[in-house]
Length: 214
Ligand code: SAH
Image (cartoon, rainbow, N blue to C red; front, top):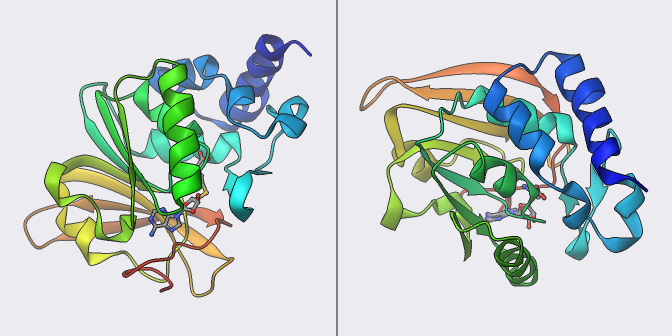
């Protein structure tokens, strides 16, 4: 299987073909080797137009959704970004190529450990993987220019709202049950004001934890 060709086709058909046009996002999606982030038995499907299972009953998101979420953050390359839900580490790798620093939090230790190891091997030196409950964010490194949540919760965690810079953007799937969500873009307008815009319907694995599904 020629992964480079498959990645190029994915970029043209699934990403550019569906209207993603931010050059930083396109370059990152064209560079990150998704085949390294999927389970070995799914390597041939690495560039398929779908989410795929990873260890511990979790998933690596569909390439288009990763690109769509990151494009909505309008990154220019100099930002510090917080990701909740490291999973395979794939979205963190794409973010690392569109921002200055990525702090990513994963609550399942086995996944955090394997993503940390893989990202180190692949020499992503601007990503810090933290094991813990991401619904509380990461006070130590806050505030963030952008926050992306890759699991679906019942509401926007208050801690994440507080840790977003004024002018910063957050993308998060929010829904009434654990399998159906709307992808929401939040912009912090001032100390107290936030605007919300719905982007599309999505299906993410549940956001668990103190400010998630519990
Ligand atoms: N961004 C990932 C997608 C992973 S799926 C990728 O590119 O592969 C979502 C992940 O969120 C799962 O690994 C799940 O364990 C994790 N998760 C769910 N609730 C969480 C929480 N409160 N804190 C941190 N991670 C969480």
